[in-house]
Image (tube, rainbow, N blue to C red; front, top):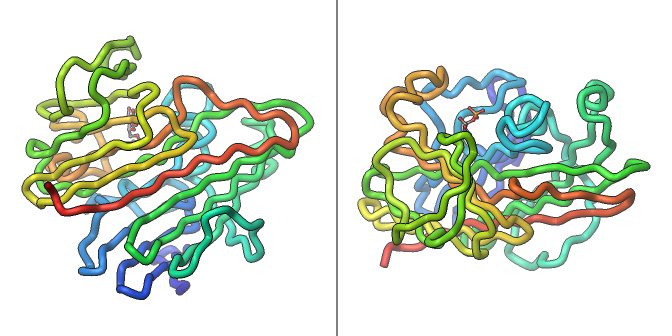
Length: 289
Ligand code: BG6
């Protein structure tokens, strides 16, 4: 189903046969909504979100590519989230297609202007699929169609909707090393059990296992993040002070959101000419145990 937002940008709504849905914008290839069969929204979108291109919307799942954060010379989080993507009508087939899955394929290629700031020709194919059980999968395939190698970082900057950040725990990052953006990207080792939140957090956990869980006790639900090809996990909550400096985020909204991203940040990925990389993120939601 194809609709448009108020700026005329196409939005694609995927619905499975049980009534779960996901909405993807061609602006940034960004997932803006993911709802269960009971029509509960699972992703956070700020009430102050600014839907005015080319800036990415505050919430959902913006894609950071080819740079994460300010670790490089490009604009913050790279340019992919600020571009209009195209629908790919006849995509190359992909393992794991099966009945009951609805999906859309998007494609981003660099414009001549992009080539001036990042002189590498690529094809970025994004498949967003919603399974019969409501799981949401984002599969990225990035191909080097250049004559020379290039390297990139990537993150699915997933804003989960949570009841109250103080009640949330993240499991699966115990004992890992992380780079702390709040301490000059210095390396630390996670000491605690599960991760809980009582102040600003802005970290890149390194080489995590392929499953991470976000437990929301109040809502009695758990998000399960499964990832392939994405060794790192970014965890971000701006908390009170930083929220006030973000124009498209309400002062109190940090309580209702948590970013946990499947990512490849610390070690960039290098593609030789003709080579393709695949990274996959699968999100599911379960009742809390
Ligand atoms: C996080 C970064 O991943 O994204 C933070 O580590 C940053 O430093 C945040 O503030 C949001 O970035 P942006 O560009 O979407 O405001």
